[in-house]
Image (cartoon, rainbow, N blue to C red; front, side, top):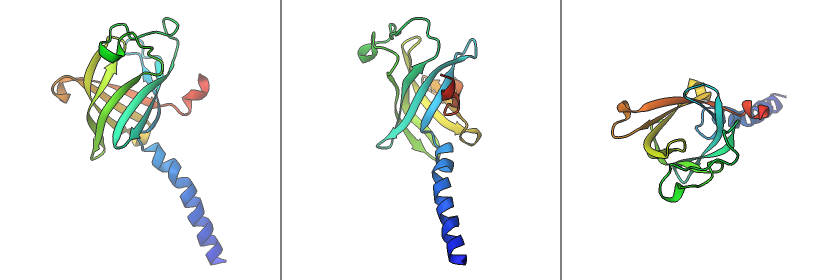
Length: 152
């Protein structure tokens, strides 16, 4: 009987582990917010590919126009649809902080150095964009969107 309880407890622990691990992970779907209105702006997916953090826009919430494009962007991003665009790349993890990569602001076409940190026990991300030094940049907070995705 003790062996059965031990095995059952072990299995329940293993089943619950991915949920716990995922909740503190930078990977997942996140809600971004408009800086001026504070309203939900988009859903973005963030994943790790060969040690590199990447992110793309998977849903635009109430866009101003249908299928908006990155008009102010340069290079490969110029006039590309924002929906589906990979706008985070090159970040690598060091002691729980993802840094030394880039983030594109499709609203103005600017590319910034970026630093991303999981905060509030995995419920939010602190996303910082900067030019030069991180302390001179600007931060925004994104919320984990798994529960909010049901709204859209």
